[in-house]
Amino acid sequence: MNRLRRALIGAPVLGLALGLAACSGGSTIPSAVSSSASGVSGGGSGSTGTSSAAPAQGGSLTVLVVAGGLATWPNLDPLASGTANADYRNAIFGELFHQNVDGTVVPALAKSIDVSSDGLTIKIGMRDGVKFSDGTPLDAAAVVTNYKRDLDPANACQCVGTFRTIKNVAASGSNVVVTLTAPMPAFSEAVIDSALNWIASPAALTKEGKGFGTSPVGAGPFTVSSNDPSQKLVLAANPTYYIKGQPYLSQLTFQSVGNDQSAYSALQSGSAQLVEGITTQQLLTQAKSQYTVVPLPVTSVWQLTFNTLAAPLNNPLARQALAYATDAQALDQGLFGGQDKLSQEPVGSDAAFHVADVPGYKGYDLDKAKALVKQLGGLTVSMQGSPSSAGGAMMQALQSMWAKAGIKVSKISQLALPQLTANFTSHNWQVDVGFSGAADPSLGLGLSFFFSSKGPDSGVADSSLDTLINKAAHEMDQTQRAADYKAVYEKLWANTYGDFLFENPSFNVQASSVTGASNAPRWIDWGQVSVK
Image 1 (cartoon, one colour):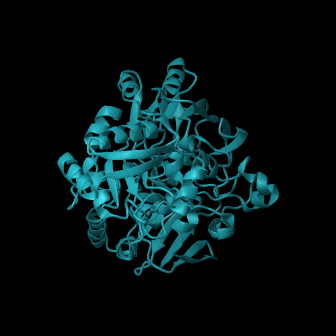
Image 2 (cartoon, one colour):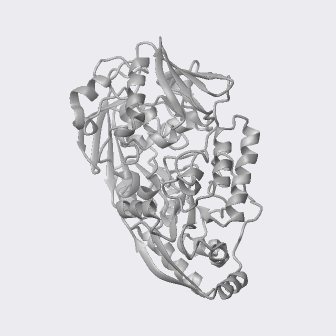
Image 3 (tube, rainbow, N blue to C red):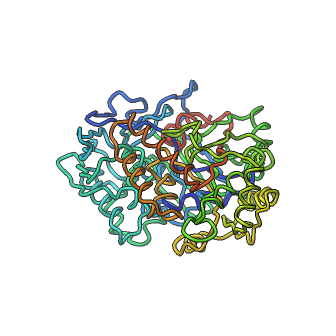
């Protein structure tokens, strides 16, 4: 999902849909510990925190997702893992692993996971008798088929970079055996938001070919009835779902909507019962009087990243001047009503290895910024970001703010994803305005993505930083990992490779008739959802 951020910042200002929805905090399964689904509520689905209201059988639910970012679904094939909300795929494919409301990751379609003491072998045990909705078995062989397909570079799955340490995948009886070249302590968290969590029917993949992404076949609680890509997806209950009695709903519909206000109006009219990813403060305040407002874990952080590979930002004094000239608190107050926590590192407060106070942090200091600009003999930079009103407003505010320190902005570019990608590849950029964040700093839009020498959106080539990031990513001891990541954050500030501003929270809003939708940290277990 290495393009997730680019999709996300297509949302409206004060309505940033699904703020890094693909990423949220969670705890890893320790080495040499087996996690099984026996005794888990919901027939082994792994969900907790069920509603006090008894679930009703039947009924239909319409879910609105604010346009931009992960509201779109041009292709529902798991391989296209950066172009659709995971909620759509979870409903169709189910989940190999599920994340509980307390952040723990547990088996769902799988029944167990064991990690060897050296962290190099992961054994995933599969349930007996589970079938895809086309009647074919979801067994270890099916998972291996999917994993080999996902990890084949020729298929361009964005999961390849995340799971680059996977050496081999093989079936052994009812087990899937994954062999690694280096420990991956956040393996289960990485699976949650990737193609590896959504197992497609091998038979349907062969039968449907390129058309599979339009009408996919999985083993989830719902099957596809109709699909108008990126507009409206209608799903019907899967009568062969492996959890007896689920799903409760007869029909589940996802629909894209233009903005927070339109979504909220639909909720008020009764044409929808749940809206994902609202951030507009006025609407959230209003909603609390008649709806259930569900805060999503905060792992997303607004950040500025600098291209240190070319002038003028190859000069650390220029990067320091930008950091000192940026008043994060004033930006948050002016653009978002001061609702957000300030951040000193690219990790949200609900993610793993968050550090509130980072040694070497360069906060707002206008006098220092002015002095550095004078020492440099002036400073002129360009900015780039997505074509969203939020990104545009942020860049305009930064331009005015930096002018007080004597920093000039030569150009503000709001670019579509293909051009942003091309700019990063060619290093044809100076300051990038966007988001960072992941459940674990080693995943998704984490440290490697933005700051390693080979990161797709990185303007940094620092071998010593690469060493620190890699050490933290593969360390099995969690206490040592925490120390390693703190060292990485300190290194980022010692060299001013970026500036981390404030968090980007988002919320789901649902009608009182909906039950079972607020018992997960981010992605909903649709089999447990019902409407009165």
